[in-house]
Amino acid sequence: MRLRLSKQFSFVLNGEAVTVTCPPAYTLLEVLRHVLHLTGTKDGCSSGDCGACTVLLDGRPVHSCLTLISQVEGRNVVTVEGIGENVPKCYAEEGAVQCGYCIPGFVVTTAAFLEENPSPTEDEIRDALRGNLCRCTGYVKIVNAVKKAAGGIG
Amino acid sequence: MRSLAYVDVLSPKTLEEALEILDENKGDIRVLAGGTDLILQLRKSTSFNGKLVNIFSLDQLRYIRLEGTNVKIGALTDFHTIAESPIIQKHAPFLADAARWIGSVQILNKASIGGNIVNASPAADSLPALYVLEATLTLQSKAAKRHLPISEFYKGYKKLDLRPNELLVEISFNSVKENQIGMFFKHGLRQGDAISVVNGAVLLEVTPGSHVVRDARIALGAVAPTVVRAKEAEAHLKGKKLDEKTMSEVSELVVTSISPIDDVRGSAVYRAEMCKNYVYMTLWKIAEVLRS
Image 1 (cartoon, each protein chain N blue to C red):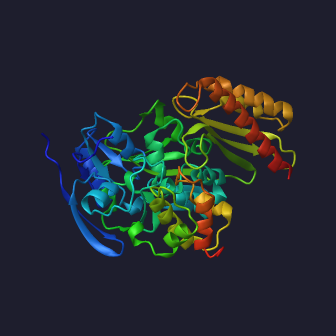
Image 2 (image 1 turned 135 degrees about the vertical axis):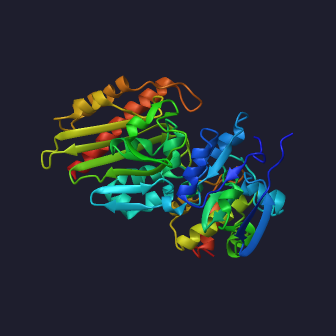
């Protein structure tokens, strides 16, 4: 049997410096869920299509399933656990959540988007969320939640 | 999909170190840039037993510069940066447009232009734009550097003129001139994040005032083993105005340059038809812009 490789990686996670020891080709998603037990980030499709595993890498949304821990060395990662309260609260209040599996990805993408564009139009909201799929509710309530988080309604 | 727990990843700190690693591990190593396609390929593969050289942290390969009329893009530059770059928006607007539609926000933030080129998918969305720009690729190894027109880089389906110890480091092209107008088109099955069924780019040079076409470049993707230039269609456009008859004839002529296949995203017949239609629509849009 081949020996499993292990290397050490340091990065900033939700504002705190962390060091993990794991295989260098583990995905960031594997490290978050299986090594650090931060299970807020979801594994939807494992192939970069659904956006459920979205995290912020140096402030920008990326797929943690298509990112290797080796690419994260020295960088800054924010997961849904590190996102402020406003966006999740607006999702809940607008009833944008049914099964909930896609929501951490939506919340992370929304938070980064509103940081860049605090008063977006509906078209801009839909465009920013084009990489996040929800198979339960459709997108009307999700878009409303983003509007609310931006201070648009309520 | 398998875990990559047994794959070693080497992470050089400098370009020189990366080229050294490639030189020592000829052929047995894959280059990891953004990784948005490679990681998926490797997780689906049962045959990969090599190593990865992770160049993701080589920030010296991230830049967009204008030198005279020459635009230079570092190979690691991501598509979000390309789409938003004032230099690209001004000097190759249809490349900015192509970059914008390559994938979701998440993909744009990580995928690199160099990765899109070396991954060599015939459906890669940056390629038709780079073909009509007649872009030059800079390939560097430990000992040498060479420049290659993009059309000569592809020798067949996923076959590249890239030596095992070489790294694509830069993409360059001349900025679009005043009397040139270009457009990108893409037909995917999902607007937000889809592999193209057909894509392409058109770049026309027209005589100011009369709008007679002086030079035409049409590049088509996802309809042959590599991106192709529609040479007969291009030749037919030269010396003509963009009237209804010319646009119809030109869009019919693109079929002489393509050899589409049936796959999960569409049949060969469908692809050929969509390719003709999109070339027609793109010429029509260009004609509209010229009129206004």
